[in-house]
Image 1 (spheres, rainbow, N blue to C red):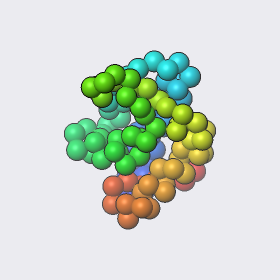
Image 2 (image 1 turned 120 degrees about the vertical axis):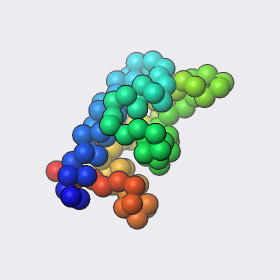
Image 3 (image 1 turned 135 degrees about the horizontal axis):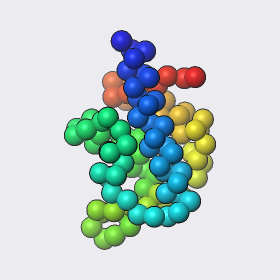
Image 4 (image 1 turned 90 degrees about the horizontal axis):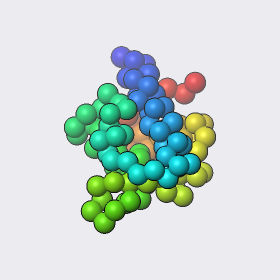
Length: 104
């Protein structure tokens, strides 16, 4: 069961990573809903991943924090390996309760 959960998380995290790379290069704004649509995480689960793993990479693109851009904080994590390690560290910090990572 843990292995399947880990595979599911990687299947969700990789599209977010690819999206962040593209948006980092283009600086095109996006919404949380745009990111959520890339994953099977919904509701509270998505909000947990956003706040613990992804929020540090984004900056508000407007004054209302409705749209975002990928900020310079993403630069050190712009490779899949570095991003995956960041996710693994976040999972460890959270005692592994909010996510699992399959290291390939």
